[in-house]
Amino acid sequence: MNIYYIGGSPCAGKSSVAEILCSKYNLYYFKADDFLDRYMQAGARKGYPVCEKAAGMNAEQIWMREPLLQCKEEFDIYREIFEFVTEDLKWIDRKDGIITEAAAYLPELMKRSGIPGSRYMAITPTKEFQITHYRKRDFVPLVLAGCNDKETAFRNWMDRDVLFAREVQRQCHRENYVSVINDGTMEVNELADLAAAHFGLK
Image (cartoon, rainbow, N blue to C red; front, top):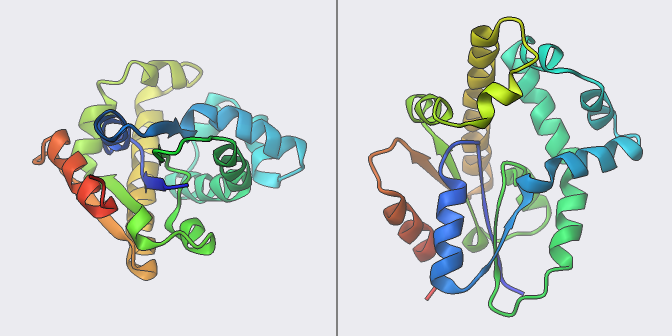
């Protein structure tokens, strides 16, 4: 089965690109981040340490920590839950192929799984693009609702994702995967066309 993976960091345009490719090329769209809570709960039940720790934390404990620590734990969570994501993909039966996107698709995990460069790309945002678009998201106040200092918590969140993007870019370079940085100058349809050309979709 043809599976096309889009990784990268949050608020980069991954979902928008996947939705366009899904519609234009009759692909099944699997948005792994929609199941993140379930994957983390499964990891906690199996005794995976970072999933266990995250399951017991409230918003204040999560977002008021150092961004570097938050970033490290985010990578560790994705390493712990990757088996659950790949297991779900196995159950999808679509002859036309699957387009799937998630921050969980770390370049290092793609390489370890034998995913060729023609089936994976990462999209990460510039800091300015990221913050501008996060400010527009309705879910942000809900995520930070339990924090006493919401503005500091938001800055920590943004700094975490900047660090995350840089590490994804570094891993792409190391593993020889395509890495696209979205600074907002390219329309989403152009970004989708770029992804389609990379994947060889027709």
